[in-house]
Length: 206
Image (cartoon, rainbow, N blue to C red; front, top):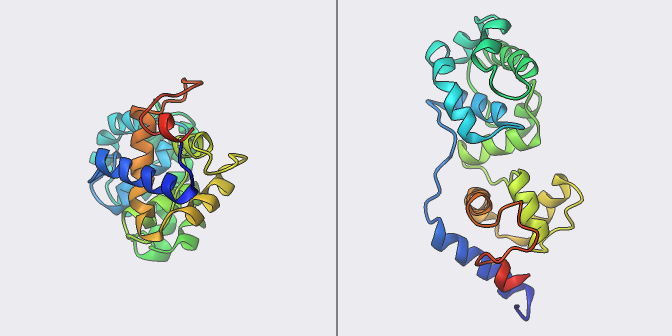
């Protein structure tokens, strides 16, 4: 246990940095557009599953223009193994059409403009601006939400509150990297099934 909050945060940062000094984006993609689609598909699914089903989709459509020309049914068939495939296929089609019409096929680098796109919420938009455009953001997924609560960094009431708490706690220049580091740590060490975790971080701070 640490005597003060600053030492605790410093320990978390250093531990994650030692384990994941250069964390790579876990979703396979060819460009900014395909990354946006992959992030949209990852909602209520796993990155592993998304990476399994996207190659045929991106082989047919790796740009907003190409995707906008596919029928919703065709997109749905290509992503049918993913949860919420009917809704996601409609959103991907509409999102692609809007990119072509409003942004000349380019993905906007604005959080607010991204959130206006069908199927793109706070988390997805934050992932895009942080990992592609290198704008400071702290997207909160289930792993980050769980670990923030477990490490007593947030009350854990909802992901919005968790995001605010983590942004307040960690230096802004570390947000984008920490987002990936905490996800990887949650998947590998601090897993959800553990009621009392004894991982290298929990054993020291909880």
